[in-house]
Amino acid sequence: MNASTTTTRAALLASLTALAACGGGGGDAAPAPAPVPPPVACTSSPPPAPPVTVSAEPQVTFAVTNGFGVSGTMVLTLNRTAAPVTVANFLQYVNSGFYNCTVFHRLVPGFVLQGGGFATPLTASGVALGATKPTNAPIVLEDNNGLSNRRWTLAMARTGQPDTATSQFFINVVDNNTILDRTATTRGYAVFGTVTAGTEVVTAALAAPNCVSLASVFGDTSCLPTPNLTITAAIQTR
Image: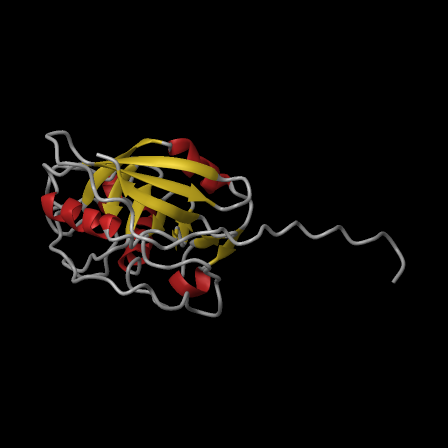
């Protein structure tokens, strides 16, 4: 690994260890400002009871919108066989209604799209994002389960310590296996599922024109999609 690659890896890993830690007269007329959409209507009610357990791996459907051009559903197929603790934890949040009305609060271009911690509406202010939603206890890190941080996979965010993941997760928008997978000397980030339908919604979110810099919060190229990219419903559909 050359010096440039090492520097990039270090910067991204430093970024990810913070993923779950922040709570924290005359002339031509001026162009008209861009229209601002109304806040997304979102009711934070628990979803329906989960379906009867079957042998197939569970699935969760997210309804996602920013109220201004990005809207659709994402189907997440979870790998309960490889990551039983992580999947059980994620489904507990889903089935309690925790993710309803939360936002994808962090986009790192060419890296990840992260959500699962902050309720809408969310604005970037000063050097913090405000308080995250109260969570359950952290879980053990299943980073040696044979799954890899490839494009469109779903993984848990955590702090710099291994067993600290709670509710926040991220979607790998490129292959991040050489940066985020476990190695002989470093712990990794636990993959527990894949976006198996609706990747076009993620792609549209990545291309949305307004993303407010979070450099003062994370010290990297992170930004807050604005208007908020909101999960209006999270339902276990299998």
